[in-house]
Length: 271
Image (cartoon, rainbow, N blue to C red; front, side, top):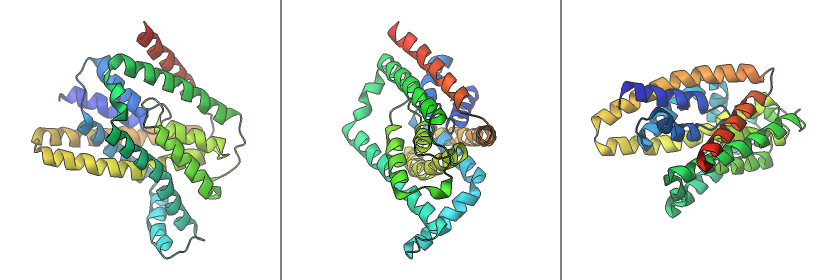
């Protein structure tokens, strides 16, 4: 792959992964817009790994709490917040892992191989879930903080995360939407959304790394490393700016972007 192509893919992934606008949709759309060939699943996985390291760095305190909390959880100390956080992240990850396995075994996403059909699906999911994000952000009680989440909350948010396997839905967008509907304030909803991404990306990244090693393609490995580093830098900047934004402002700009993008895609798909 050319360096230009790697930069585009890394920037798209790094900027959109943790914003509520769907990174998978943008990764699918990037080759269509730039005229570049599809980067393939291994490069997609590499840029996801880059964003993983960014979120680990930004939320290192929460990650450290969850890490040590896991060992407290094994000892049955569920009265501790760090143990509950570890438990909630595990619970929230189970639905998307199970759904991913079902999708893979049954090849449910076969319909995404048709470009025109893919554009239609992405257009509708981008538009519809953008509206849901607006409703959740504007018209729900928003007084709860992260430490007030319950077992039921994480199950529901985990189920929402599983729906994000459909391109255009946005994993971060739908988990933030679910969090807002459950009464979390914007910062808490965003923190939980980003923390829930960690186990999912780790699992997918491990499989992607194995595929690259098994392929024996040295150039592909080099391209993957470059893409991962670039996406790490882009994601680091995007996460910090996003968290600063939602601390004092709403999700409305992201909703407007989703609606505009959805209408554009639907216009292209049905033309």
